[in-house]
Amino acid sequence: MGTNTVSGVDPDALRAEVRDKYTEVATNPEGRFHFHTGRKLAELLGYPVDVLDALPEEAVASFAGVDNPFAAGSIPAGARVVDFGSGGGFDCVVAATLVGAGGRIVGVDMTPAMLERSRRVAAALGLDNVEFREGILEQVPVDDGWADVVISNGVLNLVADKAGVLGEAARVLRRGGILQFADIAVGGEVPEAAKCDIELWTDCIAGGLSVDEWADLIGAAGFERLSIGRRTDTFAGAAGEPRARAFDVYAHTFRAVRP
Image (cartoon, rainbow, N blue to C red; front, side, top):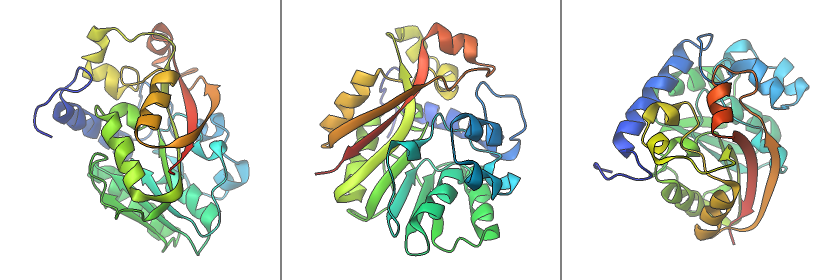
């Protein structure tokens, strides 16, 4: 994308910092971060206990989402699902339990360490219908109209060109396909100085939008029938909670249809 500045940051510099941060989450998931991770986080966000109990620790350890996108609506058996920013693969594993053997899951991520972990997890679980592809969300390596559902969890806030990513979601979805994601929302205006602070972006704070701004971008990408889920205090008890509270940062789920 060159050095064009979007939303106050250089997209290439932001991408490099995000890779560094989430390489650490992939390789040292027990480390200290400004956000929750792992099984504790999945429990906090309301993922089904029976699903969590059935998974080995490696499948959950590097999870770093902000809410439960599956709470926004059901995903049918046999569906083809693309996970934008699949990280350690936890949401792809959950999606695989929903779509069954007749469905397919493609996770897309730009961090090699996360891809290595997610592929290892899928292989260990025998999930032949789950694959992971390296790529950036502004240029998703998935064919036009392939997917029935696009999911994402706490990733779009880490991308400068959110409109471009939502456009990619529309491109890879079939007509009538579902966009279903969870991400950071803010209750007030983020100061310009914060928008230029890459550390605040990688800590999932500065890159959030208000609910109305998210809704406007989703509509502009061509989606309709938008529904917005619960407000979740995703930083409660995390190391970054004071800063999150200073910017009134929380999370929402969003669900919309490609006409």
